[in-house]
Length: 399
Image 1 (cartoon, rainbow, N blue to C red):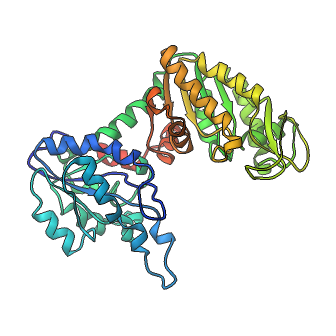
Image 2: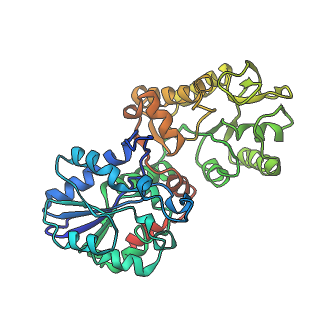
C-alpha cells in the first residue's frame, strides 16, 4: 500500500449494526478499518470508500423498491467523520453523476463515502460493467473487507481485474486476518484446542474435518453438540438435532480417533422446558435429557472440563457459542470459554484466534477482546478460509 498522490478505491466492511434510530451499536468494523484509511491519507492519497450495509435487495418495500432510508450509508457519515477527525464527504449513489463528480474533485487527504454498493443489482452478481464503472472513479484499488472476501461481488473481486498488479493491494486489516488465520492453520504450537459451537453440524463439517488433522482436541458445544450426542445413543429430549446428519456425526467421531484428535462433548447441560430465558431450568447429564426439555447451554461439569482444556493450551481457535448466549440464563458456558481463552493468552502465552461471527459478539460482551491474540471481523469468510477454501476477494488481488 505504498501508493501516493492517487485516488484510492478502498473496499471496507462497514456492515455495522444499527438501532431503531439508525445509531451504530457496535463500531468494531469501522475501528478495524481506520489504520488502512489513515495510512492512505498519510501517504497523500484521496480515499474513496465502498461498502455494503445489510441486505437491501432482500428487504424490499411493498412497492418493490429498495428501502434506502434504512440501508443508506449516510447513517455512518457523522460517526466516521468523528473517528477520522475530518469531514467525510458522501455521494448518494455509487457510479452515478454525483459519485463521478465528487470523486473527480476529491483532493489528497480527503475521504468520500459512496452509497451502499448493494443498492446496485450488479454488486452481488459480480457484474463486470458495474465493477468497471466503479474502477473508473479511482487510480488504485485496495480491499480491506475480509468479512466479504468469500463473496465474488463486483466491489470485492471483479473490480480488481481493472487494475494493474502495482495498483491493487490488501489493506492492513485484510493482511492481519490472512496472517492470523494462516498461523492457526499452519504454525500452531501444541497443545492445540479448537472450540466449535453454534446450531448446526452441517455448517461446520468441513471446518471440523480440517481441524481434526491439526488439533489435539475439539470441544463441541452449542446446539450442534446434541446431534453428536444422539449419534452416540444419548437421549437429548427436544434439543436441537439434525437427524439427517447423524451418520455424518458418527463418521466424524470415527475420523477423530484415526487422527488422534479427542472430541469432547459436554458432560452435562443446562436444560429448559421451553426456548425462553424465563423457562424452568435444571442441570442433567447431556445423554439423559428428558422429553419435553432442551439443552440450551453446557452445564457446570462441562464448563469446568472445557475451561481446563483451554487454559492449558498453547493454540486456541474458537468459532461458535456454547449455548444460547443471547439469553442471560444460558450465557455462562460461552462466557467461560471467553475467560479461559483470555487466561491462556495472558498467563500461558497461548496464541488465541476468535474466529468470527457470534464468537466475536461473545468476546466483546465479556470485555476480553483485548486479552486474546486476534479477533476476526469475518464470520463466513473466516470459516471458509479455515476450511481451506479459496476466497474470491483474496484471489482477485493475488492474480
